[in-house]
Amino acid sequence: MDLLDTLTAKGLRGEIPTREEALAVLATSDDELLDVVAAAGKVRRRWFGRRVKLNYLVNLKSGLCPEDCSYCSQRLGSKAEILKYTWLKPDQAADAARAGVAGGAKRVCLVASGRGPTDRDIDRVTDTMAAIKEADPQVEICVCLGLLSDNQAERLKAAGADAYNHNLNTSEGTYGDITTTHTYADRVDTVQKAHGAGLSACSGLIAGMGESDEDLVDVVFALRELGSDSVPVNFLIPFEGTPLAKEWNLTPQRCLRILAMVRFVNPDTEVRIAGGREVHLRSMQPLGLHIANSIFLGDYLTSEGQAGQADLDMIKDAGFEVEGAGEATLPRHRADVAAAAAGSCGTAASACGGGGCGPCGGHAHTPEAEAAPAAQAPTAEGAADELRSDLVKVRRRGAGTELAPNA
Ligand code: SF4
Image (cartoon, rainbow, N blue to C red):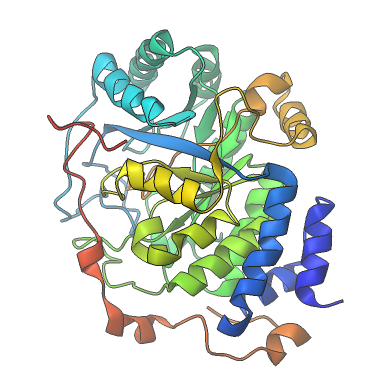
């Protein structure tokens, strides 16, 4: 049986591939791309039908972070000309959230820059969640506030949060090259704290930071092991004024291969195309919907996405449908596993997803990979010829401005 038949059969049974098979997906050629998308699409439809979950980001506190995550426009020393503001008031955040829900979002992702919240910050977010749920009790809320201290996850859960987002971002082996002010282990600890408190765990990655195929596979398997219910796949938005501004390493084809690999390793988990969708997939975005079952509606934290209406039109034109508020995201068996891991009932865990603090290679050694043409996966040097900084548009509307949100 060839690679794609094997991966499809495994995915339809909810089984995950071997590490070698995952690497081989990343090493497939451009000639095989539509076959890769079709195989991942079968797995996607088995567990998620044609539904697309919409998530809406509200940046509660923007910029001025003391941490040094290289990919982030809000980092210490960032020269990116992003919006900078401190905590939105609960009614301001609720107004922004309402616009996203009116546009079809099922989940609102409340994000704040910073190393982690103080207990006073947890109070602020508690008030904000109350304001949002007062307007729409059904809306799911995912909170993303950085590293959590003891008992903060429990407080967020008690206040009505459904999920907590904290991305691993990259492999353990390369984490220290990306960030020095906290560790990979710190990030794992926060995901475990959130999960242990009964919050649905949302944790994903950022591709395009110069990592190898092995790094990508490492982080995706680590996310699976951690029990992330939702895996946001960010494609680096290389902001001018950040250390990774020149890292234009991705092509639309490479992004689709990465999404397919993430889907095969997470057949029955929410896979979300997150930051960088428009910048890197460009006109290939609709093909991404055949693999991922979730996207962000409208704008990102510090950059603008395409118009919310364009997102909705794309979903409809590609033959998909927006997931409704009453529909469970995860398949039942997966929601039960998530609930058991969290030590809670299945209700909250079946409604999972999340946002993100931040924008959210090599080759395999298998016979399949060795037989594949080596024309894909551009190197950093190769891609540097094709800087597309014109595609990165700093967010100037929505939360923290006088202008209406894009939803
Ligand atoms: S990703 Fe989060 S912690 Fe890191 S610099 Fe950006 S806002 Fe700060």
